[in-house]
Image (cartoon, rainbow, N blue to C red; front, side):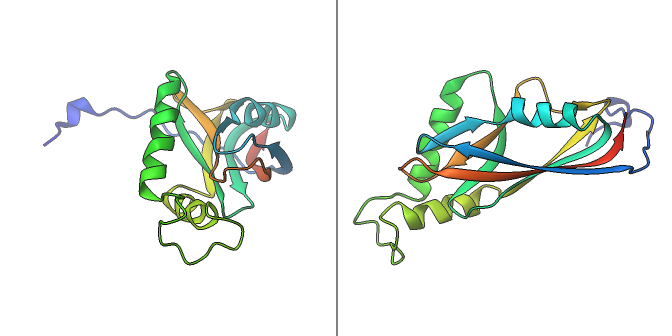
Length: 159
């Protein structure tokens, strides 16, 4: 059991919602793998003069997804790609029924189901409240390059 002395919390802060700002981010992926969207998300937050609120990211696809993951050691992304490939292999003989767009189509849908299509990131004092080693990534689950769309929406108070 955790003692009460080992948990601390800052005083609550509040902001009146005065802004809802949206933008469409278009990303050309190189094929299977991770694309870091953190700097684009931070630029959007700065452009809308966000102060306190929340940034929502939503990908408009079913064969690519979003995640927040470590940004320090690139081998983490390699291992995550390997793990997803083990969960949903795109071999011709994997037994998938749906293969309308090729053998990597159904596994891409499964990988999206295992990850996320939307993320919610708090914005505090105009900055994304990500941890030191966190970054926002688009994960392309298809083998070929694709054009992906991510909706960015800030809701909160502006400067």
